[in-house]
Image 1 (cartoon, rainbow, N blue to C red):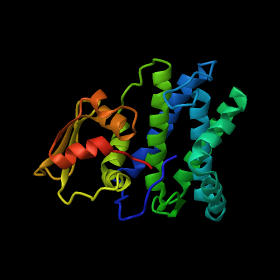
Image 2 (spheres, rainbow, N blue to C red):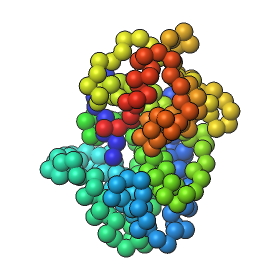
Image 3 (spheres, one colour):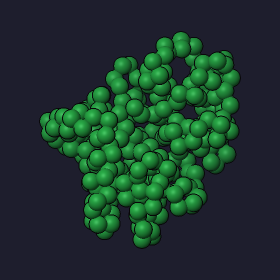
Image 4 (cartoon, rainbow, N blue to C red):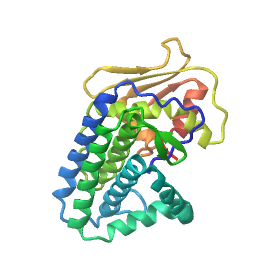
Length: 260
């Protein structure tokens, strides 16, 4: 479950109208993959997590996001339950969901996705509501849910030895990775480098996506897919083609993350 820290991170979003359709499409693609799989007990790259655990985690996160969005006062109980369970909260929550019959879990996930999508569509994009460690808006929650759907979906694609086709939806995940630079250094207990960074990534359609000033000395380059895989901790740096110019850029690739 994505958690953010509210310490001046720029959480603005340049394309809010495009994120929600992409979130829905990402969920639909993963749904098509897992609904065709009769066995959800196969272990995934996440230690102790099966396919069912991955889907249960996504379903629980969607449900919690819906609570935060529609009944923010009730989200305090969710926070207290999370704090009481400690570091094992996500594992316990996923295990509880995975214990359901496959059909019930699939229905829960589908219903939750649809309800959250409708709620995000109805609420103004700048409406603030509580989340883990921050106040969020629908404009940021939508790409966060897309990022988690994509990342946990990648675990399932890897489990099934299936190709996870890269799409332009990756731009939302990459954008989170870029604005997560502050979070990465914070989590590693390192000072945030003062110099600007330039990120240049080749999109699945051949375009180049860029962030930061063109004159920046600290640079990260190569494919949009590899940056997504690295920022979500689905691949180690040596398993990607990513290159970095500058000491701080190299350090960022070592510690990159989009969630705590």
